[in-house]
Length: 290
Image 1: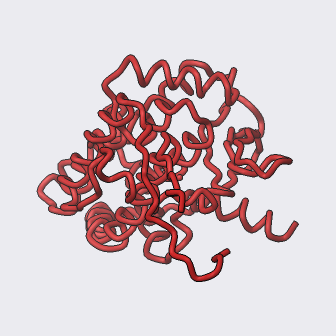
Image 2: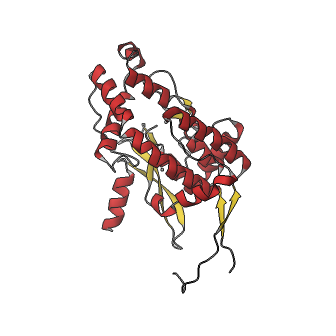
């Protein structure tokens, strides 16, 4: 029988990496990172933010609590850092949020700095002329020119707007018939990931594994099977991420990217503005009611 060929392209690899990171990160966000956020918020007398729950943080009450606490802590001025500078929980959150896996730390005005990845940079540079094509192409150019190995910038390096939207949704909290009885031969996994994507991804994986004592597989041909199996394109359908907003409009308008299917059932990214913030949970519930 002919051997099945399973090609690990940029999309397959990056969506596989996204899924592996996402599931690993959730465990930490529901555990030690949640405790760290609770400890820091308590020390500062900061209540959870009453905001729409973006990304995957609606999936579990602990993730939701972590999201609300982190959104609140992200609004605390840096001048209050002395109140928690010796707290283990705060130091853990600070180390995490200033890590390169989220991009370069943003300005030093806030207690917890958010990551500035390639897409964040071009959103700032091109406002208000936002479109999928402009942002995708400019983010790619920005990522190539930089040494950024954040997950979103890895998505930008793929030049694939579906991948970019999926990975950005993952990082929303931080700046996504058997025939007969014959046994087919084992599939052959073919690694077709761009060298630059692979190189930066290795930095991302090593840094993430070091930060949280994790064991995501190293991006290389030997691990192609793991990324193929972790890639589940159907799971990113309906992911919606707010990329920015226009504060000059009344009411404020928010710019979103939504992963959906086109008329041929292929994944695509649709952009839209709305005066309300649309989240993954809201979009999926809206689609199910339609």
